[in-house]
Length: 263
Image (cartoon, rainbow, N blue to C red; front, side):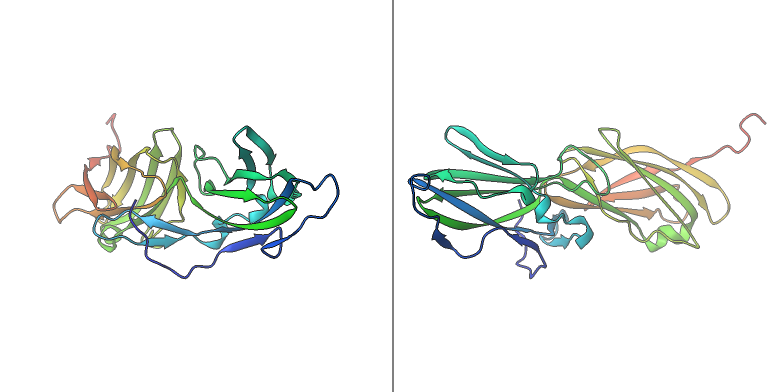
């Protein structure tokens, strides 16, 4: 994976324990046992996919879940020892001293949509007898996300347009624009990693001619990556558009729409 630039980012955090270490207490129940608290952060930074540079984009705050909604599973060499559907239910149970792994997650990587971001993070830690320790955990996006934009030339060449992006799973997102309401960019849409994307649509040229863009495969998504779909009109007299998924352009030929096919 490409290295991201070091950014100063705003993260949403929650703390379920304070301090680095404290005594659990004495008595038979505490002997050989300890507990752990977690300080969780969710990064909004996502790698962008342009091949000419390595950089990140930041997801808007409304797409970052609250850490109290994270799912937690704690496991050891013998398997799962504790699980919580939401972190707000985490009660810091006493655990036998030893090595463990905590897996945090939010969302489903196979779900697609505008609010379908899936975030995960893992932390290996050691429980110390009669101590409570605090572990820091960072989560990041694991599925793919895309947004769509139209170039200025595209927006000038077509007076109105309706576009559809489909994934291999059949999920569809529709986008519309016009001279009065130009489509300069869209909100992020989350989709499966390693899924093919297809684009289709229709538009009206400035001369009033209506055309369609047959569904065409435009590329494949990558995990933990923000893709940009850019539409550009062809040169004057060229009956096609150029659709670029990041830095990979695909030409789609226009098909004239017959207004009266039975005439």
